[in-house]
Image (cartoon, rainbow, N blue to C red; front, top):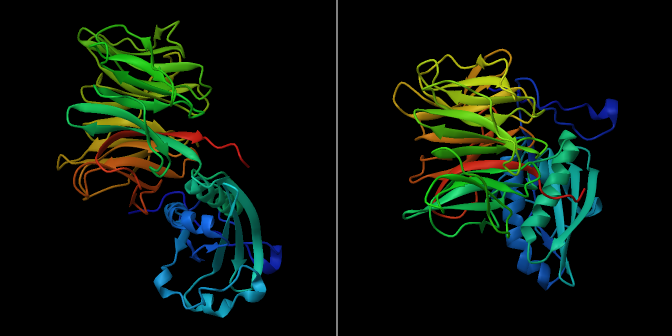
Length: 431
């Protein structure tokens, strides 16, 4: 599989006197080998939270795509080694191939879990980062995401996806319910209670979910805040699907079926002022996704005879066909970086796999192959990862990978059949 837009550039320490900076561009990718020591605990409350913290923290770093997290079974350093450089035998960490060392200390302070992270350059023994974060002791994964985000920002100079939220459909019998969870699938909360609820989409602030629901015995568009009541915003035509919030949260794009056609509409976020932005009699136009500047919409249309990805202005102007390879392309999602659209395509073996297409050049890159059906992709808020559903492990589960198709991992999500994921930007404001 060809690498796409991901490389590791190590800035010479002698020349710049700073830690290596990971620039995610180019084609010569080598993840930075890092040893992540088991967290040190300062009291009983911290010990009780350590395992949950460690699981989340390690998953964040492993899934990041920029770090090679080394297996702890290979470590030869003393497990009781301290946090300070003077207590660390760096040669032991060099022996296992580590170029960087991460140490974390946890303490429970009257119900607040405080974590201190230190990053060392193994070759020089220099401390490159020291940061402290906290979270409720009942939510150790939040502390893990905050510390992992600080480390990611240190290496890349950009936000991580670790503090963001995802939404998806959880299938149970004849029911389809909407759930919202941390980016890794943890701390899941179910919004709906039975019935058919499908195709969820998060607003850009992660505070609202738009989805299609049959709760009124017809497929209408509803919007709901986690912990709040659902409200119907569009109930027109025969079916409303594919609700997607604009980047500024002020508009909704969706597909409305009527008769033998389905058109893309754009309305205000409360459903008012709806206007059709496509007009293809007997044609189906579905699955709208906004460009990050809110000026364009990509969507699926069969106006050319088979489902293909098209791009148009948000007002319906300048329609342009984007995909020409394959005869069944669907579920596009526009990267927050603006350059790529990821989509599902059916290949010559009738298997579904994921691809990206460059919006301007039309270059197509395959991301998945020979691992079951892979569908319904969604970019992370920083555009570096892709969330998707896959049948590779039996049933349908959620997986994550880098935007070039590498480092494919199952999420730490609840068990069951999980479908149609979506991903929203940062939900945590702590710097």
